[in-house]
Length: 231
Ligand SMILES: [Zn+2]
Image (cartoon, rainbow, N blue to C red; front, side, top):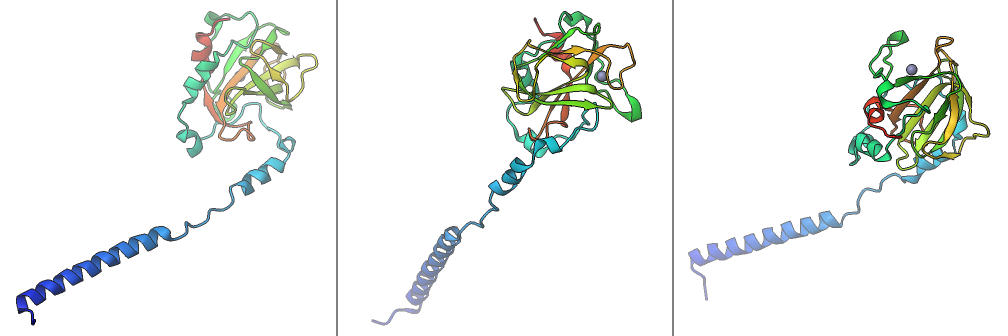
């Protein structure tokens, strides 16, 4: 039976529509079925870093330089202040009360630097205690910092505590030791670029993007934390 011109047009339209739909369906399936571009093996970079001895890298300054927050750090859900507050950091010098602390975080220092840390004044050989639970990652003697100690928080391996101008370390203290909050790790002194006789602890807290690069990060003011610390 011959179709009327009108029905023929309609039939062509239906067939064309079906063909178009089939084409779209095919393209979408074909697209999603394409293999995802393989990513470079994620272990490559990590493995290279892992075999690099950390000891080959030596912090050159007494005060870790401030660094811009990395994209990685910005992506983290728990902000550094909250992470730190949950550790309840102690005032790291025995016998010093919160009221005695001075906020020296924004003080200027030599070569246009900002202090980015707190100086806690105390007599020579006053015990310096671990502010939080954490591993001693480096015992290091630097020109500016003198006898220094780097500790990484046990509960957040991105937060580093730096203690400088020490008179000496606690007896038997070694790198790798996990110091408990309140444990004596050293003694107040005036080593490094501290004015002779101006015995104090230079105490710095910062957040690193990578725990393997523990000597530099984004500084966090210890003052508000320690101001509320209880012993
Ligand atoms: Zn200082």
